[in-house]
Length: 255
Picture 1: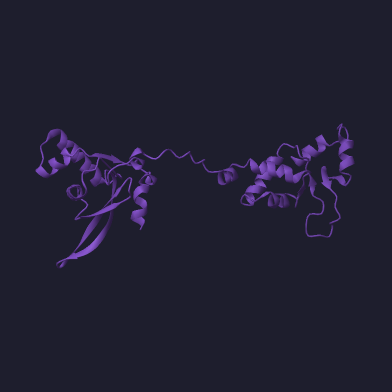
Picture 2: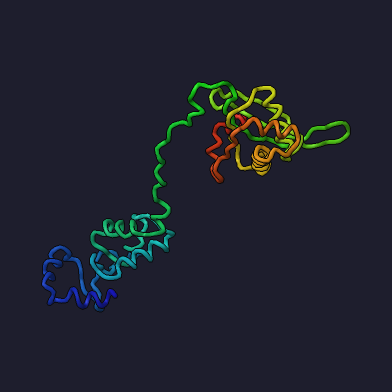
């Protein structure tokens, strides 16, 4: 590539030959190569690097090859390695342009997605309401406790109010659906009926919500569950893979 370009582009028949000689008088032709003549004959580096004009087909591939050999090094590192064997006029500018087009570097240095504007707070969090009229529900645990001679696991149901941030804790004997419904019944008896409950996508929460819906429609269950269904509590769930939707409970669970 370099040999062919030197013999064709920079021959004496080239119109800009004299202009190039005017700005680069230290260039000499040797073995069909244009070389930059330097006074480094006794140095450890290559004394006369091959001269590469900027607009040569294949220079960008050569620079990218050196750039990848250096594990995607920066402009200065790539330019220093290039100048061990070649001399490129306006080298820093050309190397910088080519490195900026490297896909691997662009993938690593790309700016993150812009944060979308924050929406308004939900109406349940800003309107005036009774305590626990709208609340969020989650579990934490399990906690090992000793009952008699046996050690068993229990969970704690944490309910927090949307507007007042008050909290209510309920003991849950197991992670079953009926334990969840029993804990909810004790909460309603103590704090009153909530209009809306927000929870994550845990299986027992989904089953409890489905149980309430089925009983409310068919009216064919025990007196306890019929009572919970008759309360007409709206049970909603956070989207899957969206833990930030549970920020109302996050602070309490981490503390």
